[in-house]
Length: 139
Image 1 (cartoon, rainbow, N blue to C red):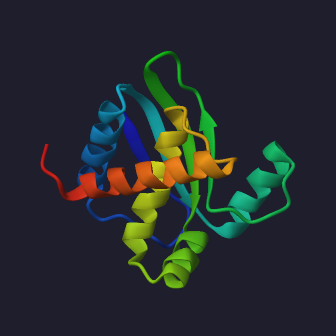
Image 2: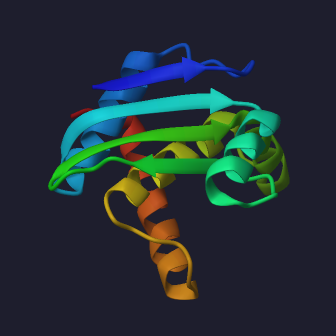
């Protein structure tokens, strides 16, 4: 089950479209959907998590807590909507396109993709682009 929680001012009106899309993204990677919670929050909220759980004192757009077991993807995905808005402006893309990029990024982490090295980052970006294109594709 995919659930959305809003702790910031950015809201998703068409939650069912996002739920359907994330389900298809997960299935396209050969996994089943477990419990996935997206928590949309502020920079400050995510910074506190980053400091408390990862010992990082920096702003970030996403933190993913992975509870995946076998082929069933589960996790908590915290997204800073402040970062999403700023990144959208910087990269000159629509806020919701950038939001979909970050949302797919979190799921791809849960599916086992990394982004630490140059090659991993490049593959992650390719996968993000692939998954974003699935948003408007009918199942």
